[in-house]
Image 1 (tube, rainbow, N blue to C red):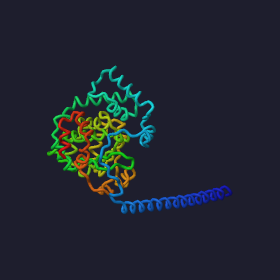
Image 2 (image 1 turned 60 degrees about the vertical axis):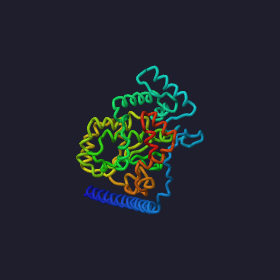
Image 3 (image 1 turned 30 degrees about the horizontal axis):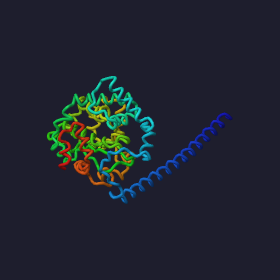
Image 4 (image 1 turned 120 degrees about the vertical axis):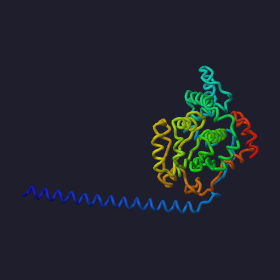
Length: 347
């Protein structure tokens, strides 16, 4: 009998403790929900108060290296190991490796050109050398991406708003590139022409030291992805995507944000994902809604269609604005874009 009483007291005590604990958890949960709700409301009010004039539009590409007192160099030292005290030494080391190994024959060996590869690989010389070898191998095996370009097609792609480069950067100073797959008419533009356009844009962007240091981000909108689009997600295309995005051009895409997914996209990406290296998969962020995207890119630096404040820009506008930079035009020609200078000047 005594044991039964003790057992009953124990059970009642457990129930009381459990109830008290549950009440405590509920209060904490309620406070957190109220705080989240308050934050969301504040963010919505903040977005409503913003307008495009609150963000500096700086489409001009600055080809000058940052001054020694520029804060971006401090960032570079912390994040990509760019040390002004040994930068020249590492460039020379890369030159020696290129000559000694003979795995590629660069068309340029000046410091500014080699520096792009070092920045893209955090100043690890052997990795910068491998990137350079990949770069020239990619050019040789995919000549259609770099030569005999129909510049009128580039303009058509810009007008179709398949790719967009806005005249502003994100909150971290990074260039943005948008790809809206629903605007891609597969009977009008081939995959080769898409790659030509995106490589041209990347090659223009990496002429800017600030972009070399900070890298860029890509937002892919897969809204209205159709079977005709999914048909092109082949191993060959996947390989080219990895090469362009990560392994064969001297730039860094810090993140790829995918928005407006669907069941068809999930299926297509499920087939494509195993073909992507792990380090690429880690860069891909699939968003279930715009709130998720806003955790990475603030609305202040997005177009209205993604919950931001800006109008949609065509990349033709961006190219037209930077076409008066003579140094840029010369650099474009040096990449092998014969006629690129005249093309940009005509915009």
